Picture 1 (cartoon, rainbow, N blue to C red):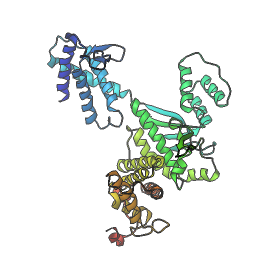
Picture 2 (picture 1 turned 180 degrees about the horizontal axis):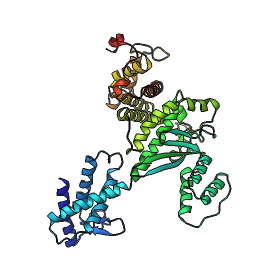
Picture 3 (picture 1 turned 90 degrees about the vertical axis):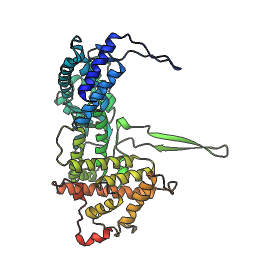
Length: 466
């Protein structure tokens, strides 16, 4: 149905809702409380509605969402339906039902269009998602920025927010007292006291504050995309380690923290009882050392490239200079992060393979082999690993055996130890991410993934790819 047809349907159902007495559905085996359907104006008032009327409003919102590519990265569809519902409720509350539906359709259409533009425009605002985390101990490396994500020592954050007028002097002083271990008197409930409680809940006792600068996102997307962006910024920093998964064990948002230790109890064939425990993640951030701080500075070019990809994700209204390569870089880092956090070796291998595939323009194993040749200089039959395994053999094990057969249910060795393959996949995945970022940094005119796969060797090696 078109938008005009949906508005006519909404008008017909409005008359039904206003003129017919509502009857609850027939009770089934399970009793449940059911209320009449309503469209809410947003100020406590509502209009009686029908299920068909609400469905037509949702279908109208879905047409908007499908036809406007700028809305898709900004709104989840259920939130856009709520915005459309409020717009229709206001528009329908203003009409004269004595007019015929053809006249009303034009009136409602124009009014809803204006109301939708007004409500959607209210989301065109910058908001910083803020929470505590463990990253690197000490004040030395901060502030540390990866695109829209800013990591800073807790006290530096407090001072900055106070200077910007975003913290009241009372709240700023009480936060300092709390973080210095001093007792606090209970405050009289107010907006300011609620802000203080929210800050303490979100940051807690974490020594580092993470702020994600978003722009134009709906409420649910702000939370969902902001958290993911913060996690990917940590993954970007972890690329400094030879094994990024080791670096990420020290890095965690307070939002994602689990119990410090997890336990199982073991019963054998005799009466003895055993136990096993594992540390979920480290209780602090990585200890800051001069070498680490130097690496953070020397990797600025890497953070700039990844930051550009993260910007496009949480600030969708802003233009992205290289959308194709930035999308691929974002997806690659996303899969890489998930792989590093994954506890199961074969699933982690599958995710590392997906990370490589994103950079290879979905050209599968052959595309990854070609990308390695272009960015790392290792041809298919050259030794890629220290033990002599060739590029082609390594990727065949990671992509074909580790990913494709596992996904398609044809793996015959899923019960074997995949830890060695996982380590190889993590190493190659890191090399590709870092080398591709290096290439993008030195060649800002690259706009297409195919250009990332252009070999640094001459055409004489063409036959090696066959």
